[in-house]
Image 1 (tube, rainbow, N blue to C red):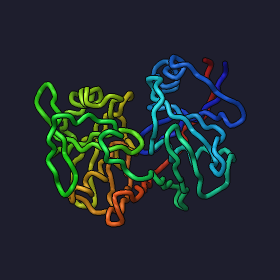
Image 2: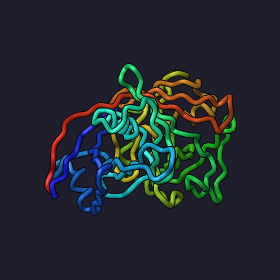
Image 3: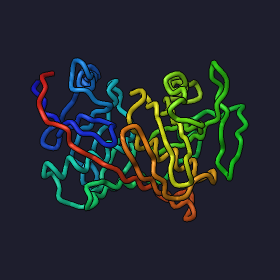
Image 4: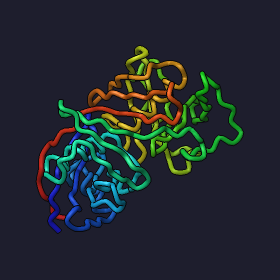
Length: 286
């Protein structure tokens, strides 16, 4: 099978994007891994498949796969690339798009400067919906934000647990460059208290309006940026009283801006703005 593709990136988080609007594309886990392989395939953190919407009033559906071949629920950086892709290919000329994922409905807006704003919906704090098993744990409350003690082989860390449509465990660190992301990341990702796995975030707060962030993504390892991870970190910091309601997030791949109006309620939607760029196009034999 000869498969056309577009390679895209958002803040260094890179994607292979496939157009299934004119016909279905069904790929095996092995084929998805081939696409994501940086030596034997195209190379990407995730693979995005653009499909027709299944719900009235919705513009598109898209599916998200890690380069491990596993389907996941949400990807903020991927959502921004999605907007650029459908606009650049003439699939839609709408300035605002409604898009359904496997478990969510999101709204995407292309800004005049080429950046994309994504309505990431409201954060979910209920541990059962992350899902996270807190049995026997006593959290430290900070301004209403619980920080849960998580036992690791080399000690214990405190994490804020929430969902942005996918699960996140965020910890504060003094210096993100020296944080043990490569050691603790996979331990947290596969921790028994997260039955579906979790994205592990390491947040350094520089000021009330700026943080630095690294994320060890579930099923993908550390990436240059993670949109939902940036949202989760900022939301945790705002709810803990450590951050203002508009925060710039510095990642290895670039800058994201996250806004959450907590003063309007915990069910306020999180808005993420950042870049999305095509890299190259081609076709691959699978």
